[in-house]
Length: 222
Image (cartoon, rainbow, N blue to C red; front, side, top):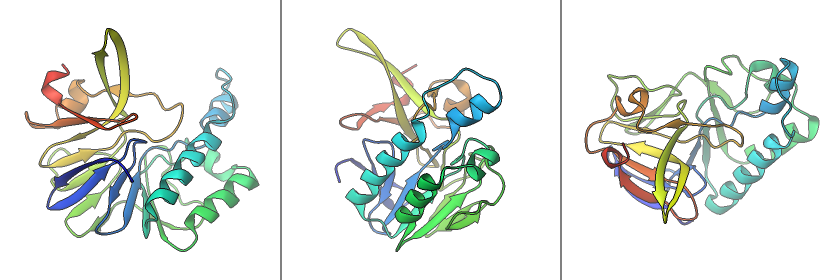
């Protein structure tokens, strides 16, 4: 599957245009912040109504990426559900879809701040996971190294051919890698915001998603 290959903590990884991370040597696919059930959660709490299709769109994209990579392991890097109730109230057809995606492979749900509890779905539920040199968790720990996380939904804002655009992006330096949100309707935080940029060293890169992954120095986006 097409993407941008780079080395992080001794592992050759591939940032995919859809916003997923693939580790070919280990057969590991990583996605973060699916936020399944977001429109239902907003409606339940009396917010504005959104078209109730974000879960279907997110799973359709995930299905396509899994089919393209054929991973042995899928890691969902936290906030897979918009809250615990959203995870418990998924329609039957969505639960069956998830079970089909899980079939024949290891599936790990990393706990996020939106979905801290166990869910009655397949797979294992962990606070964090270490594979070889890499540690996978939801929220970055400032002192950590070899860390892959999500949570912040980073986006890069730039001007391209006279148009102002924002694209979800990976952010990476020698110590940590933060993934973009994979889910539909997830919004995002500017990757130059001090909350994100402050976690990275000066030579960090932003890997912009889209038709083709584009690598830009984080410092030049500010």
